[in-house]
Length: 173
Image 1 (cartoon, helix red, strand yellow):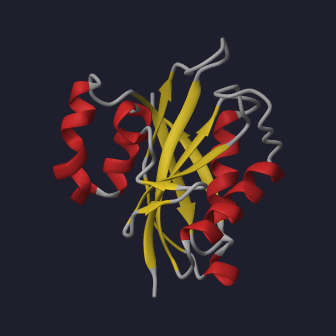
Image 2: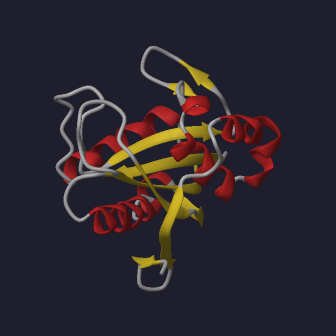
Image 3: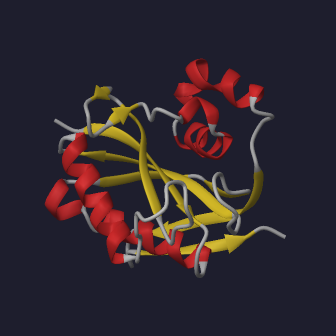
């Protein structure tokens, strides 16, 4: 049975736009092992980092369906992060790529994983893109985004081409 997931993407090191595009491509490539189907991509937002002094983040979200457990998907997302140089040295530190399961059609509370994401209601950079790819969640989350001051600044969009398997960032003027 397929489950719906909303994945948050973030990057504040290196060529951030490339990191996000490459992450979308890598997630889409999970189609064979995990029966992943990419359903939607959000705009790309820019926000100040939380935590120690560091560069600003670009954030986005994607919606997918997958025939796997959230834990199996989380392992695959962590492998993608690692392939892009993600280290976990500093809590809330800078990162080349951050992939989080923000929401899923089936909630989960374990030692390893909390769905919906435990900090979701405190993060406009996660709420705004999530609501773009899952507008049906507005009834539960739109008020939280308003309390946080609304969506962050939009910097562009991600466009995935199913035929070529490539994703490109398009900047907004």
